[in-house]
Length: 502
Image (tube, helix red, strand yellow):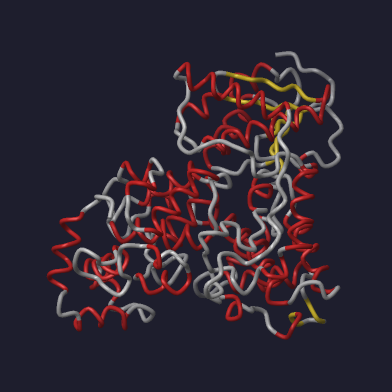
């Protein structure tokens, strides 16, 4: 094929929408909207809307520079059709996309640039990991990132005298409060692009081309960089000061609490992590936000988020299939379809309803309600990972594989976390206000009003007693099984429940 002498075409994926994915590139740009991606799996309707809206908004911003192709099929044929000259692409965010890009690079004049959108580079992480004598620890990685990027430092040490203020950031919700009393997050206004997206999704659903879970609208999350910056600035000014203390708490009347919601624009590539943490740092330095809140937020952005990204690549493609607890049951339909009305367990019902409405809940409902219940029941971690990927607006393969396989389902046997993150009803009763309106009693594990989490916790431990007896963080809990006079009755009860909604 004859090659054009013109500048290379920069091919952008749908999660590469910020200016840092073009840097100094002044040539033409290619973006492909593939309906086949939405047709292969049942994504949350709000997630599909957000992604298409963000891509189409970016196309409008780039104007004539951009060739925007709406394709019924996949990416490969479209890219080949537009390969009259050299192409370039920023390293994509999934193994599947990287495999596609690598195959095309064998056929075309295609350059793959280093990844963008993370504070620590792949090469830097690999050097750090290679130098570790023991297991990899997020806390060590996080401190190194703070030092490397000069974030929240006082000389060579941490601002506030400590690296980690997690102890201050575990407060239960205020007693008797319906919410934290904060200004709501900044919400975008929909426009004609959103109208077009919604009309297209409606038509595709009517035609049977696609199917979704959850509900769509109004759009809650930024679809442009301008919107993303406005949402970030609003969080810093109005919500960050209250973030830390109650970041692990849940109130039914306050679904957003003091959370930033910036995982969504970050994962679309609309924001850069370092610009996010520097704005938070400025709030601390000016006295507008306390160190505990700012440090907790910074840890989420350049600590945990970056760490999960690097583990996704460091642990390799087979990691997604780890299943050390031999959990093989299928996710039941009521859970998969976000049917909150199917269960009397208030925490499950409310959380599923929130996911259905927004495609988002914060990390504690994800980890300690949805993920904990799935692990207690023994659902396939591969299915659970896929469900989280599809159901959450900020869910991508690189996000969900380490978070769900490792953190949530403990399917890696302790590579990412030393203990499984699950609990009985007592934790939920302390950190949420669900239990007060629930027909189940968090103090009971057997009987008609037994909390499914309290019962499920002991059932889970009993099934894996031998594995966890030698885990120093779980040994005491395992020994507690021997003090349960009703363990046999509990096991019989939970085996009979199976995957029926509680």
